[in-house]
Image 1 (cartoon, rainbow, N blue to C red):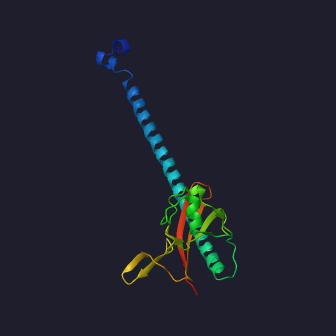
Image 2: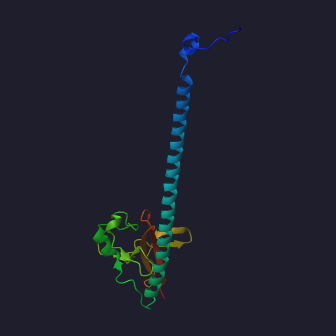
Length: 198
C-alpha cells in the first residue's frame, strides 16, 4: 500500500513558515499606495475646478465692468453734448483730490482705498458701479493755472505729458467696478475719456 504523505503546517519548511502572511501585507501596502494616489488625483481635480471657476468669474466681472465703462462713456458724451443724461452730479478733480488726500498726478486714484471711492450704481448694467471725475484745470499753490492733471496730448515727437488743451476740450476719469455672478471675481477698470470741444 502506497501512502501519500500528508502536508501539515507544523511540518512545513522553516523558510515557508516565516513568510506566512507576507503576500497579504504587501498587497495591503499596494492598496494603501493606490488609495493615496487616487485621493491625490481627486484633490487635484477639485483644485483645477475651483481655479477654472475663479477664472470664469473674473472674466465675467471684466465683461460687466467693460460694458459699464462703455455705457458711462456714452452717457457722458450725451451729457456733455447737452442732451441730458442720468449720471447725476459729476465730481471735479480738486474735490476728489481733497476728499481722498491724493497727489496732483494720481490719475489712477492709487492713493485712495478702492472701497472709499464714491461708487454709484450703473443706470443700465446690473451689479456694476461707476465713478466719474471731471479732470478740470487746477491751480498751483502760487495761484497759477496748470493743465488738466491726467490729460495726455500727442505732439510730433509722441506723447509729451500734460499740456494745456483748448478751453472747450474736456477730460474725465471714469472708473467702473463689477463682480462675477457668484461674487468671487472683482474687477475695476479705469479710463481717461476725452470729449473734444465744439
